[in-house]
Length: 221
Length: 389
Image (cartoon, rainbow over all chains, first blue to last red; front, top):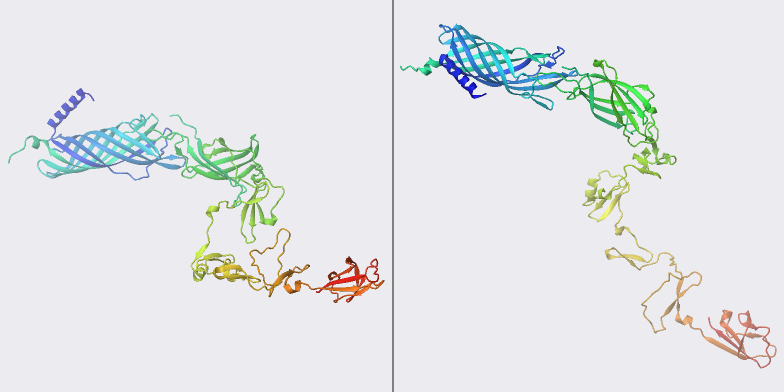
């Protein structure tokens, strides 16, 4: 990333912050799995019979009001997630356990719609899309260790579709607490044109939202 | 992606002959192999490369062929099994379905043999493919039989037609039922488990006293031994009681030998039986340091019987003889003369005529007769010298 990119990013963030109404910080508990894997013969040779470890993630973002009644909002955020996936593959007729350890930076955006928009409690539904970029990753089975960063056959970018619900509790005029459920399904990743899989994750998120105008123009009572 | 034909790879083969071993239940060769999957397995990310993971729970058939050094089949068979979860198979060559000859008919004569292995993976439908060719290693074995020769005891083991290295199991090698494996060393049978290391022998069991001994040997068997500290002796159980095999007080001395204090054996004492000391020209009997006596009174001399060698004593007076002389003036033609003493022995009589010793014969205990050539003339002096005893 060169200097012009940094300048452009700072400019966009500045513009976004100046137009945003809320800023939030959140943490998450994530579990993930590979779904619908197909080898080049169209056979799913992965078995997801093992437990799904839960890993931590963090995120920050901005929320924009899209309507005056504030029922429709727009989310723009960045998350850092770790996925640990226990799976196995078939050799002969027996399963060989395998574990993936993946670290992603995710850029997400999408709308919130408040089905309950009480002044104190809000229930919001969201449908987001995101672009995940693999920071680091590995795969281990038996005594083998594979660095997925250097492995060209593993997709570094993953496009995802999210949906979920958020319960927001307004704590004061300037901040609120929320807890959210999010289900993320990747768009099918094609590997060398004849293999495919989906990387799905389920997350429970909790965070705080702060009113930017209260921060920028604090009212004196 | 290129599809690799499904193959397996043997990465480990352990072969050892159990054939003809004494404890073997089945004649055969143990065969173990780890079978790896050489097919590339596709997973998210880098695929699993060939021969990295085992081929588990796969039904496979093996065809084993034992050949001679010229690869002529001596025996072949087929077996079907399923690999375990770790890709391992464990089979006994000789336990399958024979295709050619029988395992028992293989002559294990020490020449080089090979084990050729082919495998058929049922799911692959490719039939048998060559898998491996290994030399067969041998263990010591006996003769050409199917099992180790067995003999009841040492008297039944063969002493002819043996070759070095032949082994035999003897059920009873010492008459007590002790079994042993024996090896023919080229000249004789040797116990296979003979201990040649003298440093690992056990010492005697030590007991403080008889009570301690009895405590340690509550049910002794004949031959049990113990070092008893109280008597400082080795005790051996003879089946009835413990016997001190080195206690000096258990030794009786007699016939001129006695045991003095401190268990010292000394010469001296009463003879209990006629005793002979055999001597010869080399091994003589000597007594040195004897005290000299000048008195002839109460003094005897030791005499030895010529034939029996019995030693007796005799007074000095008996050894000194009195000489008695009788001088007679002979008549003309006289040849018989009376002796001064009764004749005990002709050797104790000497007859002189005119000072010359002449021969004679004993007529009776009191008369002698001159030899015929010694004719007396009147006035000849006949002197008869006779010793007493």
